Length: 287
Ligand code: ASP
Ligand code: MG
Image (cartoon, rainbow, N blue to C red; front, side):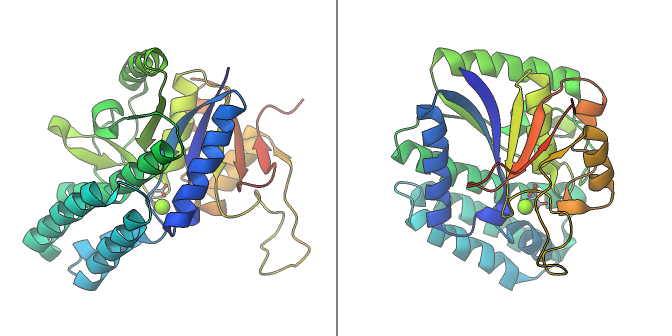
């Protein structure tokens, strides 16, 4: 059974239909003999809105709670838990307001990814995929830097290896939120904007999983900006070096730490950047 890390990006998560589509695509991978490890981002716009909420913008908070409540009501069984999560989120932000300390801010941001994970897990269950819901704060150890943490690879590898064995035993598909890690005294830290790609690549590298699929809203890394040239085409393959270079230049807003696990030779997974319907751009060792 071919193992693969599938990271579902926030750009393709805007409605309950999007979550159901993601669940169906993952279910079909399972049917085709793949064993996915699912990493999920917050729905589109949520992280930006939560940042604004931490600056005291209550409209942004409302936008998040409304969006997730609406999405959850279209995904069987998700509404009650999501309602509870949104309650805790609202009370935290209302209590902390614009005084949000850095640690509180990361805690608030984590609701974006955690809620998204609960909804996707529910969507997966509803299409017959048995899931094992994992918590990043328990497993992804970091250096504890709020807002821009770096994963502590050795400790994280130990944690993930145990979980992978357990997931195999119970025959469930592991699902975890990206972007989140464990900070000082078990607090929540975030890995920096676009950090879900970093989580996904780290998991594949540490567990020796041969491929990571970063599912996004474009068919791959484009040769030029589609808004500049209608002749922009998808680049089929890139070397790791080229991809690292591109991430440093902010291409597709890939977090520059994303390729670090590969640069450090912790693993050599192929990284496919794609939408649900194409082959995308494959980043890996060029032959
Ligand atoms: N939701 C986070 C962000 O928007 C992490 C991610 O999407 O990768 O930065
Ligand atoms: Mg995002």
